[in-house]
Length: 476
Image (cartoon, rainbow, N blue to C red; front, side, top):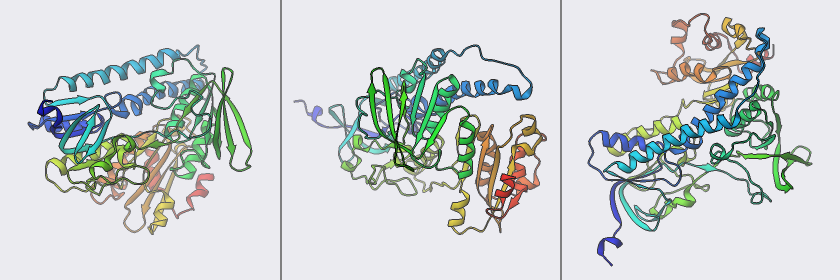
């Protein structure tokens, strides 16, 4: 046997995943580094966000948002009805856009002289050594941007019944299901459930927790649930215990956790959106001395170093704050620490996120309860959309913005919004939380365009209450 076939092929950098890890590979190549890169991808090239996450979802939700606005335009005096919606056409358009972009990235990686793309599972077999489809490679530095995958509940019948997850929803679903059961009431379940409901499916969301979006402020979850319940059935405290087939139909059995009774739901399609799982069972990072927690998420320090020198992890792989913008931010931290020799700590006090239903939900920083538990002396600001001229013009009643400030310093600790364009409205708060000492003073010193929707945020900062007191204003 030739000598080189048993020696692992050597690289300067092994990058797991073609999502945010590519930011680092691109920056190194653009900076003129003469390095050899191994890039490992066991799914579509481009990462979760592009191929099966945020981007296709937002393209679908743009259709759903417009359908809802047309359906509710009567309140503005517009008489409109929707003749038809081309469900198959919408799904095809979105998939084509994703597929073509993925292929473009794949071809550029394959053509690059400094990159070898391995389109297989990468599994550690020793220190800095990875098995890629039966051959071994080794790297001086390793980037574990291994993402996550859908958690599938291990309930009886799960293997007998076909179901969708975000992994195959965009690729495979082409006919609008008459009835859809969504397992899970987090971001993915709510967004895709809302899309299907607006397209005309009868949607039931089964959420085992006591409210949808359980990580949001309770009053935000409650408001969204009340609002979306006009278009879909939302069952909280319902845990799926069994799936089965009955002829062509699928049956989802859920236990009502408050009564102990089992309830059956008929479905033409089932969407499982019950959380995310680590990929460490595939990559086996422990074989190279990288520590994981009991769920397989990779343990990192504040510099994003793993427990093994020259191996770094970021994005979904660490199991915390699974948002694309957070992974992109972390890729910059890893680039600076691993390749520029800096010592930069990752900073998470103001990681924002949004849910792109209509209305939207957006959030950043601490919730009221968290701030109180951490010992902050806080004031809570609150304003309804209807208190602003633009909100009134939009007839956006019942939506609101809430901000949390440190009483003594006016430092912004958090903000939470439910209503149209919440994802845009939150941004000025995020920017302030990163600027200087993160205080609210610029809101008071500056001007907001009148009558723009951003006045909702401005008003929240002016209407400050004692914790709990703002609720009276809220219910009033």
